[in-house]
Image (tube, rainbow, N blue to C red; front, side, top):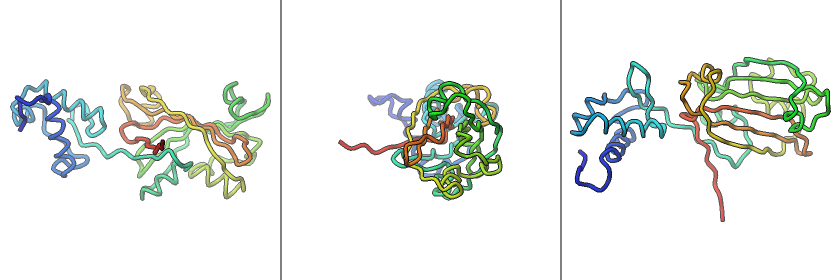
Amino acid sequence: MVNKSSHVPVYIQIVELLKEKIVHGEYTIGSTIPSERELAETFHVSRMTVRQSITQLVNSGLLYREKGRGTFVAIPKFEQPLNGLTSFTEDMLARGMEPSSHIIAFKKQVPTFDIREDLNLKDGDEVFSIARIRNADQKPMAIERMYIPVKLFPNLIEKQLQGSLYNLVENQYGLEIGNAIQQLEASIVTKEDAKYLNLDTSAVVLLIKRMSFLSNGQPFEVVRSAYRADRYKFITEIRR
């Protein structure tokens, strides 16, 4: 029960009590939690207070709402370390999950100015423009929009991009990958990406831009990705 005389706000106490129920397995992953009315009666508080608590848990990724169905316990977010250069395929396999890709665009084109600059290309050089949805256990995790110089991979075909690009670069083209520069920011999902990621149009995504380089310093890809913020979080270790 909540302590209404405590200095801790009642809605925060309810947040912590619901967290305990999730951690201890009383509310299991994918199950629905009691309704706002039921929780209000349980804790002897108003439905508005309960709604405030649930909203905080939804925003933190522990719960999610489905219109007309209720509020459910979310799948724990995947932790993605930022201290190593790995592919999506490698990340999912390391977690014991089955990665897959659904390619929605594959074409050659003359790149925009910023892509040409990022890839250190000359006027008229072409890139492969690729968009693919990245899945884990058949569930969409991210959508990638990738640009790769045609001159580096002249014989690239769509079928080769069902798996890891990094595996393709290293094992089929015999090139050595060196490092990458990555930028992250949060944003509201676009209408197009919401459709591909099965998200509400008000959902938050993590936008990631990655430039990857071969060991000789030559850039070989620019990727702009939108990751589901309710399923992914990025972590890093920093030292003084």
